[in-house]
Length: 266
Image (cartoon, rainbow, N blue to C red; front, side, top):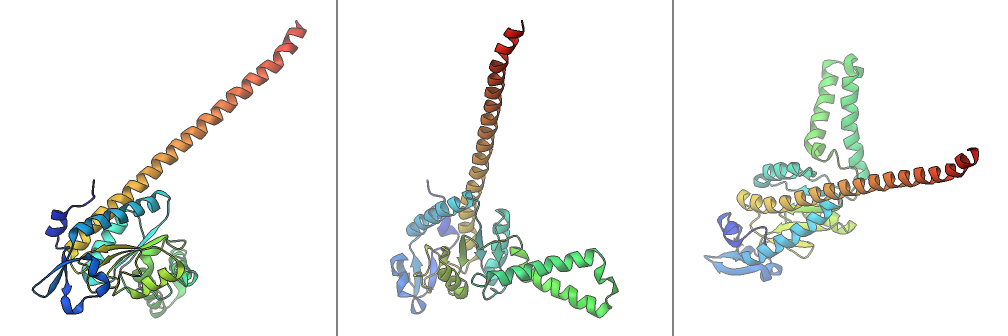
């Protein structure tokens, strides 16, 4: 059963593309028709592409890996932050830090610097600073939090990226392509889908369109996380059972070894 349906996507306005004169010919396979100079996206294909992307994301989450959500456009920021946080995934909603992926160790240093500032403030190291110096440190901490706070728990490169508007997030797409990191993306009719591994043809300018697609994808991620928990619990139970079995076998062997000695003593 599909995770979304035609009517649901239609109601959210996922079918509205851009003006015909702004189109990217590479999106032709996903365009149903033109109406009043605007391209209309084929939502039947969108439904299928959402299912493909959701299944792939589910497997990534099931393996315990991270997916980085990226959207710096105004209408997508709050939706991305809410949905990504709900499935405990990192996200970028402010300016994309150049080298975020290709120079990841430097980004990690900046995140650690944020933690160091917190530690020094907590233990009183900064208590001797002047008000001006303390204000500078506080502002630096706030800037780091704004730009990198949402990826503080990302200790290694993400296993995939989910992007809203590949035209706006070209740098993120290029960095992911360069490192061979799979890219999932909502791609509108004015964008190039060629550098995207999992294309979801849809209106990327509407908050409702973004939300309905993210709901489906995050539900799949949740399923993957829950299945991982169940499998881990089953594996732990099997290991414990095996351990108990070995203990019982050892006890039986010890009892068998002691039996002849006891008989001889009698």
